[in-house]
Amino acid sequence: MTDTASTSAELRITLIRAADLLAAPWKNGGGVTREIAAYPHAAGYDTFIWRVSLADVEQAGPFSRFAGVDRTLVLLSGAGMLLDETQGRMR
Image 1 (tube, rainbow, N blue to C red):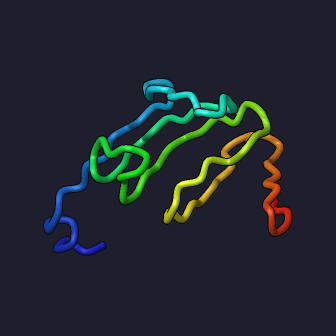
Image 2 (tube, rainbow, N blue to C red):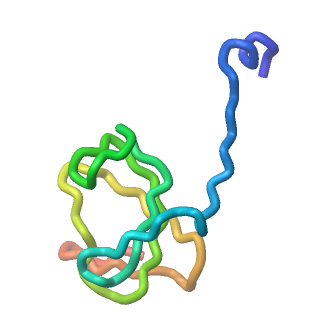
Image 3 (cartoon, one colour):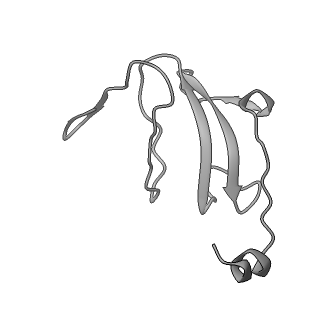
């Protein structure tokens, strides 16, 4: 990184601890989600442009659908997750 790049914008880092995030139960009772950030700020589940969250999957069940939203799942801990899709199985 050059000196000009570092002076053109100030970098600000914020530590976010999972324990400090509010846990919201899923409608199906299968887990909880903790929102880290969303745009626009405080957007609802049907109005966000992008969203980053942590989820604890506690039991098997239907996967919530967000129409028009591409999702990326990253396993942070555990033995894995098997998604049983109508068009085949995904691991």
